[in-house]
Image (cartoon, rainbow, N blue to C red):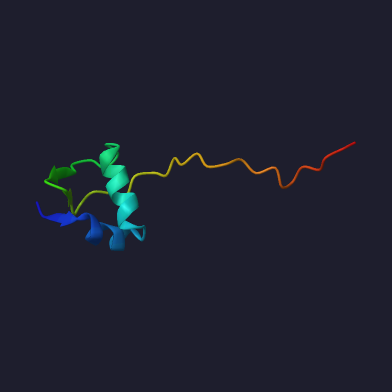
Length: 65
């Protein structure tokens, strides 16, 4: 099994390396291991689904008086 760094995975998954490290820290990337301050991720691991909460938009609602 070959391991890739968070920077290499970020390019493959087309997201930021910071986001990859955050997902690894949350335990959402299967098989990821941390060596010192570097995350090593198996090259066969798939990108986890996004479950960001974010803010809810009220743009479509109009205020009635």
